[in-house]
Image 1 (cartoon, rainbow, N blue to C red):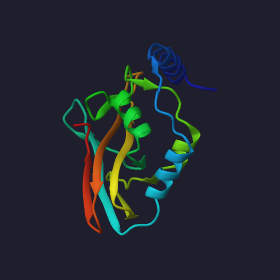
Image 2 (tube, rainbow, N blue to C red; image 1 turned 90 degrees about the horizontal axis):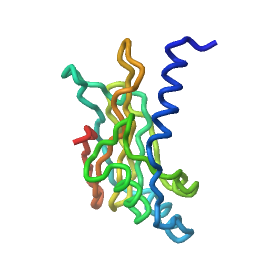
Image 3 (tube, rainbow, N blue to C red; image 1 turned 90 degrees about the vertical axis):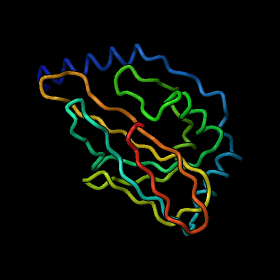
Image 4 (cartoon, one colour; image 1 turned 180 degrees about the vertical axis):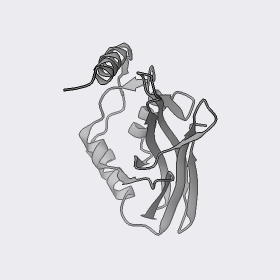
Amino acid sequence: MIGWRAGVCALAMAGLTACVQQQKIETSFDDAMAAHAKAQLETGEATIKGSAFLRKPSGNFATAGGEWVYLIPATPYAEERFRKLFSDGRYNSAVFGNGVAPADPRYSDAMRKLKAHKDGSFRFENVKPGRYFVSTTLTWLPKDEYLPHGGAIFDEVTVKGDETAEVILSGK
């Protein structure tokens, strides 16, 4: 049986989700784009390392420890999804944030993911040169509140040769 607090939270989230308009992605993630994205994920010699965190209203930091971090080739489809989700920023609130239609299933197959360490750090190795989006979701539920704080964060990174590129996911 769910506790009353969890039940109220679930109902509130269901209601809030209904208020967020799902924007349609106009760019098609066709077979050619899927093949290009998968080729971008083949083994390379570069590394992308970084950390993911958000500053809480109290001034303390919440890290993305244990959260999935995604490495997504910057295809036209991904560019449109990120533009609609994040507008001109690098942060999309968990509550009242921008929404998009569900992704093409091939899009989910054309990305790498790993779990962030408990301090929010992550490291993608054997990356091919190119342009990528690195993204994660970081939320928490403050005591005596019913709606989550935080949201999705991302940044864009370009990798050249066999370098180590660094990225900070902070919503800024």
